[in-house]
Image 1 (cartoon, rainbow, N blue to C red):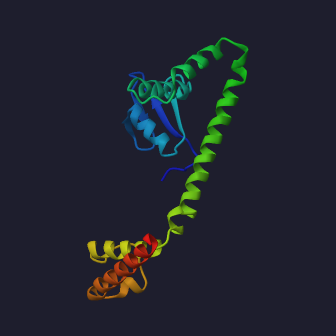
Image 2: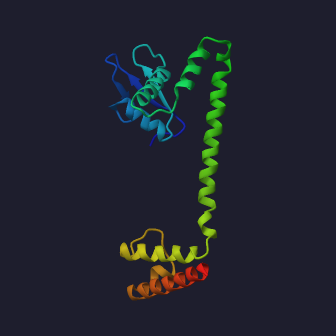
Image 3: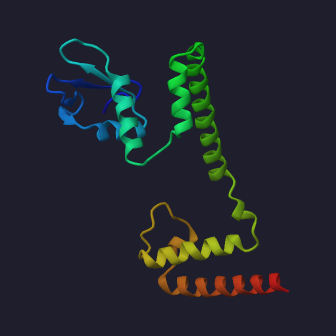
Length: 181
């Protein structure tokens, strides 16, 4: 198992083939993009000269995705980037982009955290009954093989499950009819 904080070393041979030093096999640009999406840091070096080619290959990956219609960078943003290379603004652009991406990542992390902690559906009347019914239904469909489900519903027999589902369905229908009044 590779160290998570150690970059994955990819060597570029004279033939321009890319070699993954961890798995001892050749990789493509798409493989490298997958490693990055999975959270791995990647370093690409020229085997002969030892030059770091990571930046060049990352730009190539972005260019290929953009050319396939997977556009993230609009023409206006690309135009501004080109302008920043010829102006005094080039010194602030990398810092601005880095800060923007950090804010985006932090926002996404917090949103995912909030989605797992607080489920807005949980406040809905009858949600617990629906969730319990769904669990029983999934248990019935999987033959009681649901991973991580233990407790009273997992210990009951098949005949009890059907009556539980019927009782919960009746309770849910009762609650829904009361809500409609």
